[in-house]
Length: 143
Image (cartoon, rainbow, N blue to C red):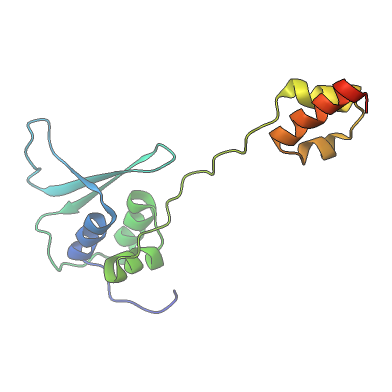
């Protein structure tokens, strides 16, 4: 989104955190901080994001430099993702890494390439089930 938007406010910042489901952090005593509202958010890749909103949470806006830092380093979103969450409740896409496909055991790959003389590229294109079936076929029929 390249359209010009109004400056983000502390209220917008908090609305983003609440909408996306960030957890408010409290001090060891279980009380809230007196100068900031602190939030954390666990990402699928194991990182934990932290952000803080100065008290009072109000319509005070952020300057461009600090806002750029908050988006990039604390919230880890683009301006478009931020505003889509705040205005339309569209959550940022924070998918974790895709689960790796079930891999072919190294011994099966080695046997197919070295013993059955199947090109490695062809073996790598197979699923685990296909590779194991092909190896079983080779061991039972010799082909």
